[in-house]
Image (cartoon, each protein chain N blue to C red):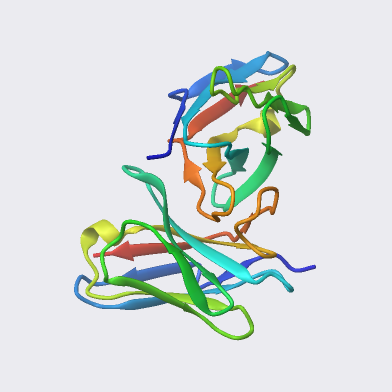
Length: 112
Length: 115
């Protein structure tokens, strides 16, 4: 079945550091890939997405590229801020299916 | 445009009881999905409703059920509650559902505690 494996947390970085959160997936066909972010006490917010191989999703300084050859969708940001502290989830969705399959989440804490 | 709303936000129930959670999707959205979030199992898909029909179902026991009304509002019901049902229940809506690129928007969730 479909699965998403993402970097175990927690991850603690200093402000302005470079961020990478690894995500790899297993799925048949060509799923769409997503990064969601969850702030304390809130639901999930879509951060970025990519729907086909080599697509790059970007938003709020975050980027991720759909790599079919390595089945990966790593999240990166060049300079993190304290406000980026949250839990980040990588997810996939098969075409024609509404179900999202999530990774376990990575808790990110940014220290001033 | 108002976002996805879920009621109630917090709920405490006793083992053996049943509970009903409500979700109002974004206006114009016809697909509603439900997810369970727990520290041990993470985020797991429960089911999806579209035009009042269940279109997709996750791997949960029959105690978990749902429905969707003609105005796209959805409810989920859990009968004979168990301690392990304590979780954050998230609802998500999208325009048509099931299409690549059709974004899902999540509500704030209902935190259910079973004692």
